[in-house]
Image (tube, rainbow, N blue to C red; front, side, top):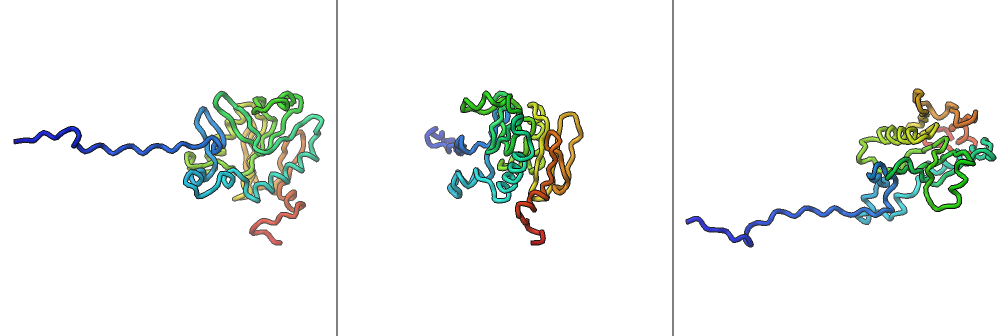
Length: 215
């Protein structure tokens, strides 16, 4: 005789693992409602790293940003342009925003935002990025992330995007409706309004000697 198994004795299906909630503080950027987290954010969730460890810049990253920033503050007409830094929050579309290492704005266009505690909606003339703090787990590699973010910025009205890669010491320059190009960072590139930047020269003048260079 075939026995009837009581429902209470049937093997219960394995419960689905609950997805761990990621704190908003670990969101680096947002694209169409999809969060882009800080690099190594998983280690914060497991307690391996504190929050500050993934949000901070590496030594070479912040030094290059500082060198570029100092150069621009001297080279640009600050009566006309505003140079911003410290992960500038730029809202590119509804439910979408990007963080910028350095941004050059038309001063009059961005002036109204100084009175408010919010991200800017007006596109900068130039966005300059040095590496990235973003988690690349959904991109596969750094270059795929760079292409997506660069195109997003251009589509949002940014006139020029400049990326600095410390790993291979290259600079990518992108403008709307023009051919993008990649060059070595000892090759002068125009930042804006006739101002050219030779990153290698700026680093040498700042006394920065990278690995693989003669001291």
